Amino acid sequence: MSPRSALILTVICLSIINGVYTTDWSGMAKTTLKSALKIKPNNRIAKNVIIFIGDGMGLSTINAARIYKGQKLGNTGEETILEYETFPNVALSKVYGSDKQVPESAQTATALLCGEKTNFNVVGLKDSVGASNCSAYIRLGQEAEVKSIIRHAIKQGKSTGVVTTTRVTHATPAATYAHSPHRDWESDADINATLHGDCMDIAQQLINSNHDIQVVLGGGRRAFLPVTEPDPKTNLPGVNLRLDGRNLVQRWELLQQGKNKKYKYVWRKQDFDAVDPNDTDYLLGLFSPSHMQYELERDTSSDGEPSLTEMTDKAIKILSRNKKGFVLMVEGGRIDHAHHDTTAKKALVDAVQFEEAVKMAVTLTNKDDTLVVVTADHSHPFSLTGYTNRGNPILGLVDQESFELQPTLDDLPYTSLLYANGPGYTTPRQNLTGIRTDANNYMQQSAVPLDSETHSGEDVGIYAMGPMSHLFHGVHEQHYVAHVIQYAACIGEYANECDKDARMSISAAPTYSFNYIILTVCLLFSYS
Image (cartoon, rainbow, N blue to C red):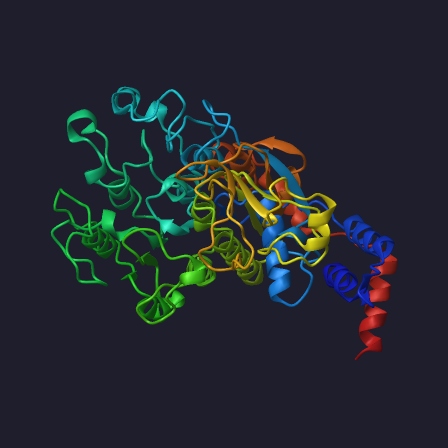
């Protein structure tokens, strides 16, 4: 039995007797210690890199998602172990931006994917450019740009992909390829031509300058299609945004034709499912005019949308055909949106789906040559509170026993999951007696009234497995992540600094004691 299996078995099976928890805590710790003692640094070169970004997936979200998943499986929940929580290397990331104590997603994505902190709302540019300052960007030109790990990988001959549940032009995916003084300049309709006409919109940057990214999957087709054309799914006018008359999907197809490669554009699940990854070189999937649906509400019909796990599976199978390897960014983007609406259930369901995508990636790759990094861009003011008993429903009210330990001053019940600010504020506070707080659209209560809940500034987790994952080892600046990825894969700023011969020799020449070899041979014969 593997150490991971032994740990899970210890946690789950040691037991509930007459309603009393009698877990062998010492035994659990010893199992974990034995597993940790077996961990050795992997100094190989990362042929492949997959970075998973749970947008807004702070530690409190991970904690709640862990319990939610466990309770859906019929357990108390707290003992659940998420896939990336088994990774051998864990660190913390400091998420502040160049100009903000509490950041937004464009500047954090630029840090994670490009290796430099920048300003609020700026994507793919250094902090010498302020938000919406097109003239500064035009004046500085390439000097202001920072290249992403995706662009660095392409330069080294690797395949690349971008997968997200948001619009593919949204803040986090945009940082993989775009340079824009404002994250909201997703289409030409979003840019004031009089003030910022010299800056190219993000959708156009993806198609014109980054059509060599082999897999792009997500939402946001409205930024790629003319306002005069109806949406392909609803056949309704006025959905698309482009004012310049350009059909960027047709432009993408034309560019792929010139490469003499096999390509496919899809906008619904039926066509996505029909894509053969062994016979497809380039895949563009735009499954919604705006963001894709929450997993809780996802249309799984033929005209619906694929899941994040399904998109991750397809992307890896296409990209892994390249013998030089690949770099893939996968974003669970709607975790963040659900938090902004203070709808915790939607956030947790998307967080569990995100974990399923990580599990799929681990299944399809080899930890010896693939670096997998799971992190968040920032957190949210979201917390689990109330001295609740083990097994208390994560979406429910604080149990009566715990409530009586410290009653509320207004003597009204409250949920264990709460937000510090957001649209869930009411005055007087709502009496939740008899309210289905586990309903899909239930909004958790919040302390400060805002139209939309904000981000928070605390550190977020980094979970890593594979080559050079041991370089994640403490508390790091967020932009350090991109540097570790570049070093591990010998790309970008470290393409000429990697001692490839030494690292390959380490990976190619494992050493075993003579006694170990003899024992192995004897065991093989004894079972033959």
